[in-house]
Image (cartoon, rainbow, N blue to C red; front, side, top):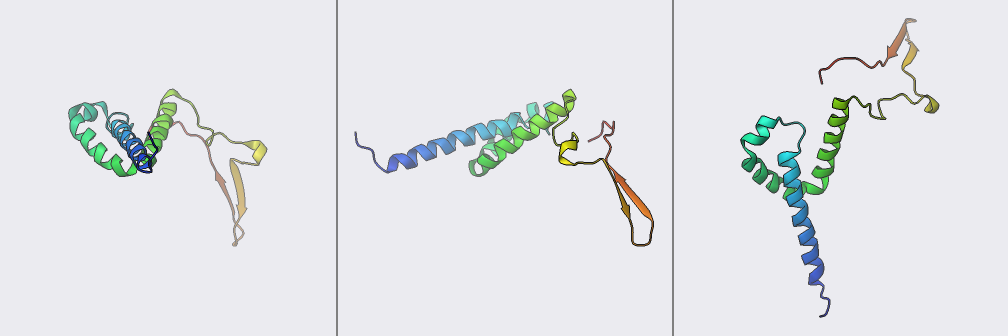
Length: 118
């Protein structure tokens, strides 16, 4: 059996189709921004629309959706992402003071709140 150039197109198409199928599943069932009622209510429509959308955009949508899912799961379990925690070795500060042009002093602070609202 000889190796033809058209095998490259077939393999690339198969990889793209498998990615689109996985992407439609991720969009339909693993999207963290939809409630369980919405997922179970019209799952066929979500799956078909997810398939059409992911046919073109799955290489970009799947990692973004999974990263958003991981972030929301970490927030629900109480973990703090590394970009929230202050890194004092890199010189990050939580308060900075400024002297304005008219002579008044201004300070800006970043504090972690206890709000449960997004």
